[in-house]
Length: 246
Ligand code: ADP
Ligand code: MG
Image 1 (tube, helix red, strand yellow):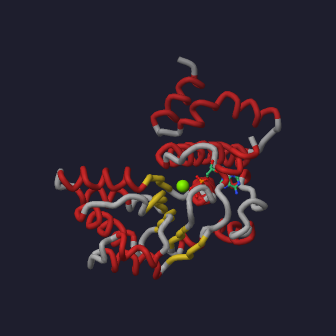
Image 2 (cartoon, rainbow, N blue to C red):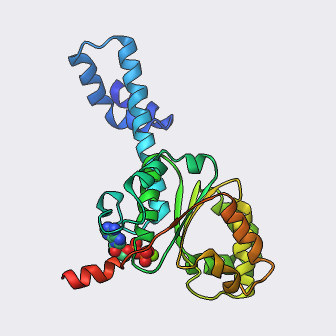
Image 3 (spheres, protein in one colour):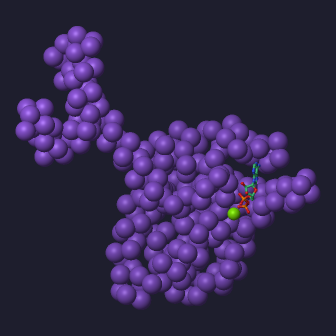
């Protein structure tokens, strides 16, 4: 085995995979540029860090399970005029995540609630935050399964490892008492600790009714509202527009 191969093997044992993979090129580059020892040492560290950061972001993106095709760049503010680009851009410093605040998008179907929420979550992934997307029914089902196994606490603890949980389409269908209780436990765990983005067709004034005015619902709503920016979206459904235009 050559010295180069041995050295590559050492880097691999030290889990410096990027250096191990690229050592011949890194050496050639340093030689070609007459790099100083310090330059070279720096380049090795830099490359390893870069590749690890990329892998971390890729892993976060895979785990987030964002629906495809909802980039903010594709959002048309000429169609959706009840929120401005400036308002959305103001969220992209992610102060709301750092301050454990929530976003709530309320409005009728097709006005872009999911698109905006997913677009913001996509940028949060780019910025290095850990994000998870769940449809509300999917999430309720997951919590129910965990609860039946006696693992609700564990499941919620797993969810709180994400910086941001996007719950899409909350309130579209009625839920059982147990489902509402599970959801309450989740919101309670996130309160002042992690951030939520909710999309819903329910105005908050309807929510008491939706939750059968039950004494679990009231604190859920209070907690969500207390630390939320709320965006009421209106206008015509974009789906209808696409249909009539096509
Ligand atoms: P909602 O969640 O409010 O029901 P969606 O975000 O799912 O609506 O939007 C419905 C469809 O229309 C999606 O394919 C979405 O990408 C698209 N859409 C909605 N609003 C806009 C917009 N202002 N610009 C571009 N696409 C939009
Ligand atoms: Mg939606």
